[in-house]
Image (cartoon, rainbow, N blue to C red; front, side):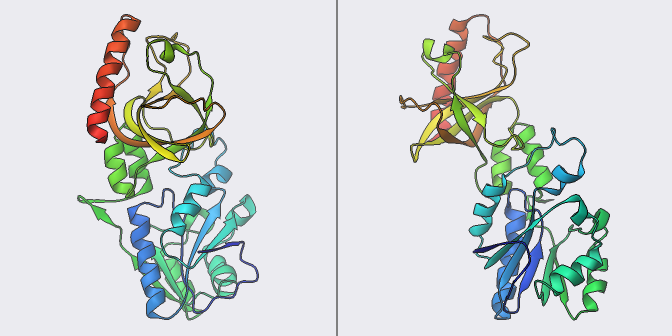
Length: 309
């Protein structure tokens, strides 16, 4: 996949094009992108996907602190690169760009700059000023320039259409197993290992405290999870706690993300690790004392190992 920053100096051969945010690059997105690749092969052209950076909501919404997404932009590029598309165009999204009307985008970008011959859009795709560019609008505009427009239906899984919003909801409800099925891969977060209070090591369950690399990356619901951890370019089994650790912390304590990596005893402070979510074990609980917490952690480890095996 060749990456293009912006849409100047492009020269494609019979480009078949699609566009979208592609948050998470889930099974629904890949269903659309598979269609893109096959259409390009049929017409002996090149497959081209267009996306935007930063995420439009980060630009348009006054308060972006509560916005969380399934993928960072680097993750999105990596996932798109595995779909088999020939080209990825990254358009810088700004308030000025958001004012461009749908038909102007078709004419000035898709036709004049990209040279689109065949446009494929998802069933719920909207673009242009205030999202006015629906399928009918786009088809009417494209017809003026001899560009074919094809709409692809949504990908269905167990009777529901897969979407980024549904996957985010599953993760926020603490259901990584369902989210992973909709994604088509296991959800993960990346972060830097920071020093904590060291209480986990005192009770036999040392944890790595994770500081997220991207503050807009969605962290699943509070609870305890069976996970896999990528560290030292190796994958380790483990269990992860998300929440305020009510047994050892005061009520005012902030939310933390801590992983206990099984069969691992190396100092990794300051290093980047990746946490891969597999199964939810339980809700966070407040125990009467540290001994009760330690006993529960022993059970959690047994359950995690059974699930991960």
